[in-house]
Image (cartoon, rainbow over all chains, first blue to last red; front, side, top):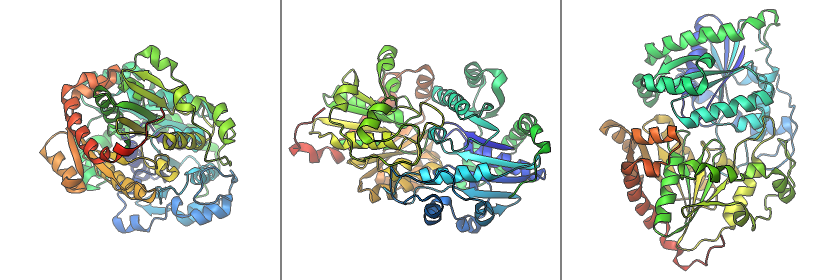
Length: 269
Length: 269
């Protein structure tokens, strides 16, 4: 199964991606997590200890390697490069691992004015497309905020987008943008998780705007998760409530997305 | 004065940009607002009525014009185009206006897989650099979430970045990333506004992580602003509390950023 967690900035993508990854790993799945948000820290949310975090080499620091494979010139906006670079060796060489979750990190912008992230997105897209998974393999991508990745079709190989919404019109609008754009890159399964729900009004707001049948589940506003984020602690360990709510959502995702994989060949990561 | 409002997704960039724009317009400044976030709606936050909103032509819908001026081919990632397109006529032709605020909109991703937003960013950068402002002119840019725009140096002409942080480690990390990257594109004035502060602990968290001397001000968590967002109402009209807090911040921004403009030539928008 390949899924991408997406939505407006600040809705809780990294929390959901991390807790899902750890739940699947705990059940014996082979899990690869991809941190594709240049402005997030999935490693911390997955509970990677600091020494392991420091050793991770993000794609954004492989500019020479990416330049060599794609033909892109680091430091430019507006240039030609190949869209099909060789990537077979990348997951093996550059994944970090902690408690059964392998992690590949896209990385941030290294230097102001150093160019766009198009070559890195192209590279990441090739890596994700290259991975062949079987029914006990899970790829979970924590996408960058917003919708530009859908123009770039970075995650066009996934089985489903999981869009997180909070009780705000902006996040609902982002959901509808993602739904439309995802269909245009061939991803027709777009599922929704409500987050930061404080009361019945919030819940109804989301249900009325998204449709109750589209919702995988609702996560209550959880001050423990907020505090864990401040302290750099994984939400998986910090909040039993959020962990258990996401476990229910995980089961629904499995029903909707894993069934098709039983006849797939063995994964190559 | 040219300023860009920036920060992690969901921290309140659009609210601050809109209220600042309306406050400056109310004092007789000539204000141009730029919505550079493909996943926001500054027009709604500025109180543009729906019929005016519908008439706005965003840059993302001018792909033919941008292609003509830059040489970019719509629908591609990885291509060459000129970084200095002709833009003198764009503000005049494509700005909408409401209650003294002129608005230019970058626009969203129109179609999944339709390419990156590099040509649009290049075009927007050229427009913002082209504008010459005098001491009674204000350009306020509501930047997209995150930090990729700093790789592209989209807003390298501004006098200051105003970074909004909320009481979370992630948003603080984004601030420090922005600070470093901004210096690398030549913007050394990086000011901070705290937002969504619920209590003394939240306030201290921000002060301890940012430094009290770096803060322009702190905005309390305001349920009225949240509700206004749901209803598509401008926060300027919805919340006296937030409006008044931002007025104090505006005065500090003016002191820090407008003084230098007294000898500048007249603006050309």
